Each structure stands twice: as structure tokens, then as C-alpha cells.
Image (cartoon, rainbow, N blue to C red; front, side):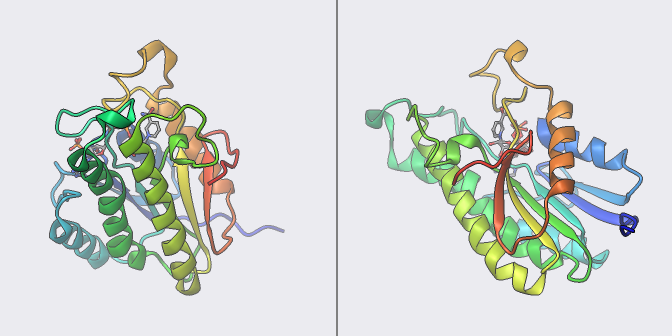
Length: 233
Ligand SMILES: NC(=O)c1ccc[n+]([C@@H]2O[C@H](COP(=O)([O-])OP(=O)(O)OC[C@H]3O[C@@H](n4cnc5c(N)ncnc54)[C@H](OP(=O)(O)O)[C@@H]3O)[C@@H](O)[C@H]2O)c1
């Protein structure tokens, strides 16, 4: 006989103002297993900015006051930053552009890991997922381009892997996942993909939630796409 799935779960979606973030919030709120789904972003109260660790710490503290968390999904990220789009060629990279992509797509998400992973319940199954991207796979890089975004997503993956190895000692029932959502209609993808060629965020989030529910804790992070297929790091 298998154990009944847990109910009364608490979830936090980070970057809830985005297309995927909003879709995750709606899907989790529609799922009767979740008693509370907190939607945090730059525009929520409390809110956080990836450029401001103190705001991240304040948000995590406020969430922790309500008890342990079972699911954390970080959907933050940006492709065009401060009006600068992804670099197609080596001669288009700049120190400032690379630093900003690292800050938003890797360092900010690492600070979210730092302050939110300790909130995970240590005696119940939990999930920490961060939105990566297939273009963050070094092994899968066939086309090149998008220097800053690719490098920052690869860094986000490494930071998650490190955090997973360390945190699994205290949270052996935790699943850590770097997610590829597919090409999804959003503010981020709009300049690069025709809406008709992209998935609805609701469809991607629904599939990713199914994938996350199927993953088993391994003591390591897992890099998976919305169909449940593993992606090489
Ligand atoms: N869409 C795709 O095809 C696709 C493909 C692969 C991977 N992804 C990844 O999926 C994730 C979600 O993307 P999306 O398509 O849903 O994009 P989106 O709609 O643009 O959402 C991005 C989210 O990141 C937040 N964010 C950006 N800069 C921030 C900052 N400085 N501080 C706090 N929050 C910040 C945004 O907040 P504001 O609303 O305040 O700007 C928003 O909540 C990203 O990590 C993206 O790289 C997307």
C-alpha cells in the first residue's frame, strides 16, 4: 500500500508576477493538496528585488514566520536586461551586460536559495525548483550565441547543484530541480518567438508540476524539461 499524498502543504512562488510564475500560482491554488500558496515578486507585499539581498532576507523571514514550506518555485529571470538583449556574437558582449545577466539570472536566484532553502520542512517531502533553461546546458549547446544568458543559466544550475548537495544532508526528503519550461509565451520570450510557436504558460506549468511530483529525492539536483526528460548539464 502506498502512503496517501500529503495535504495541507505550503508553497511559495518567487517571481509570481511573471507568466510562468502566475501560472504556477494559479495551478497550485487549484490543487487541494496546497493549503497556502504565497505569490512573491517585486510588486508583492512583502516583495523582493534580485538586486537587493536585504529584501530577499526580509521576504524569507516573513514567510518563515508562518511555518515550514513544502514547495518553493523560483521563476525569476530575464533575457533582455536594462534594454540590452542577448548577444548574438562575441564582439557584442560587454562586461556590464555579462555582470547584469549573472546578477539577475544566477546571483539573485542563489540568494533566494540561501534564504529560502532553510525554510523547507526537514521531515516531509519537499521541492525546491528553479527555472533554468535548456540553453544553460553546456553539453547541449549547439548554436552558440546568447552569451550572458547561457552563462548565467549554467551558473544557476551549478549554484543549485551545490545547494542541493549541501541541503540534502538536512533535508533528505527534498527534491531539487532545474527546470526547462519549453518555449513559453511571456514578456521574456515575446521579442524572440512568435506567440503561435510558444506554449501557453498554464500548459507548461501544469506539465512541470506533474514532473516535479514524479521526481524522487537523490541528494543532488536534477535538470529536467517539461516533458520529464533529463537534460545533460
Ligand atoms: N518563456 C520561455 O520561453 C522560457 C524558456 C526557458 C526558460 N525560461 C525561464 O523561465 C523563467 C520565467 O520566465 P517567464 O517566461 O515567465 O518570464 P517573465 O514573464 O518575464 O517573468 C520573469 C519574472 O522574473 C522577475 N524578475 C526579473 N527581474 C527581477 C528582479 N530584478 N527582481 C525580482 N524579480 C525579477 C519578473 O518580475 P517583474 O514582473 O517585476 O519584472 C517576473 O516575475 C525565467 O527564469 C526564464 O529564464 C523561460
